[in-house]
Image (cartoon, rainbow, N blue to C red; front, top):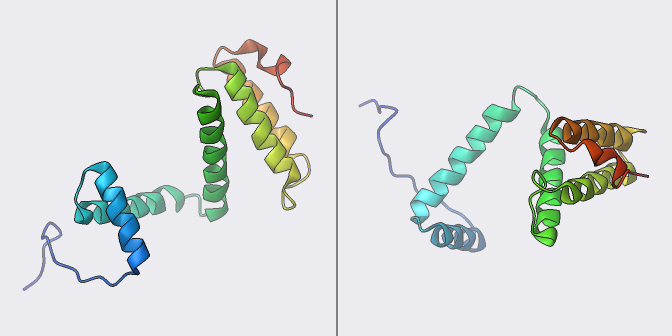
Amino acid sequence: MEREPTDIVQLKLRIREDLRQRLEDAAKASKISLNAAIIERIEKTFAFDTFMMPMGRQDLFWICSIFVGIIRTIEDKTGKRWTEDLATSVEARNTMVQFLTKSPSAPSGLGDMVARALIEALADDGHADANSKGESK
């Protein structure tokens, strides 16, 4: 008998204990079942594939992930969102530029290009004085 796409099927899975524990901890933190946590994570990977495949560039995903990590770290430090606080935005921009400038694989001038793009984005968002506060060196 052929299965329908909406059928629920049981799947036996073998994984390392440490990974099972991480999944279980995540499930408890989210107040969902272990099964739901696993399904949620698998669905997210397919969503990621759908989003990234048109770009065809996994390296773009990794640089975006690094930038998200930088922004979250600075937001945690300042207690303010980068989209709502100019000083936090500038610190995030400068940290990203510094990361790109010091990266051995970064093309020459990439940090400055990102800085200009972020300055323009901040100016478009009503932060007209973004260029005068914390210009990258």
